[in-house]
Each structure stands twice: as C-alpha cells, then as structure tokens.
Length: 137
Image 1 (cartoon, rainbow, N blue to C red):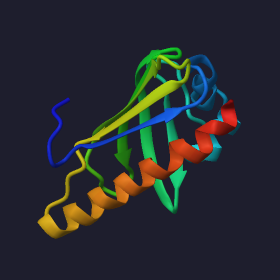
Image 2 (cartoon, rainbow, N blue to C red):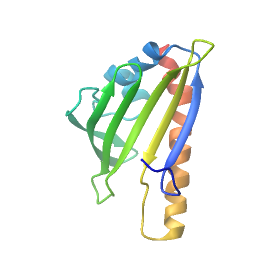
Image 3 (cartoon, helix red, strand yellow):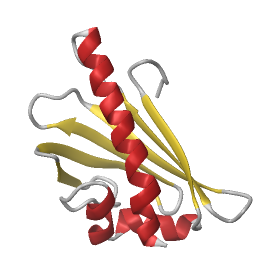
Image 4 (cartoon, rainbow, N blue to C red):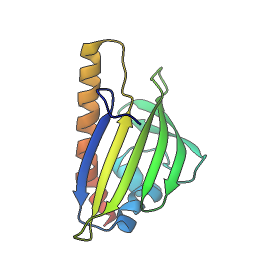
C-alpha cells in the first residue's frame, strides 16, 4: 500500500509482548472494547460487520499471522470507499510491542472533507491502541 495523503499511519509502543497484544484481536470481548463491537475475526476469508459510533463497517480478513499481522478489507456500509486496514505487531528490544496501524485509502471527494475525515481517522486510531489494547496485558 502506498503511503500518501490518503493513508493514515499510526504507531505506538505497548508494554506487553506481541502474543499478549494479539489477544486484543483474537478475543472478541477485548476487540469490542478497543476497536468496535461486532465480532472481529482473525481467520482469513471470514467476513464480519463492526459498529462504531453509529457507522457500520463491512470487513473481511485478508491476512492473519498471529502475533505479527492482521490485514482487513474495510468498507463503510453507507457508501464508503473500499480500503484496507493493517495492524503490524513487532517485538521491541525492551520486550514490548510496536503496533503500526495503516488505513488507506481514506478518500472523499472534497479536499476539505478529506482533511476532516483524515484527521478524525488519525484521532480515532491514535486514541484506541494506547489505552485500550493495554487491557490485553
């Protein structure tokens, strides 16, 4: 995926090993707490719907490598542009996890609306991993 103005990239370090952080993806009650309710799956090919702040998002697991990577197809049901969200987990030298979230393209038709949507996506992704993924530890 190309990283450009239509791609949101957020990175954060979590003081838990990747295997522990992976639980926040693979255990539905943990995933619902930090991402959105709706039954997140880590099985390639499975489809599910997330519900976040009144929005419904159709998802498909495109790739899953436990404790390393989860890549989802992502489309808001009310006419959103199809995109992908990837979550990459890397062991840090201190024994924790570097989480890198890449979501793109985040595309809308007007430059102003794109900026607002992109900023909202950045704020949304940036706030979730830090506080909520720690619950898996």
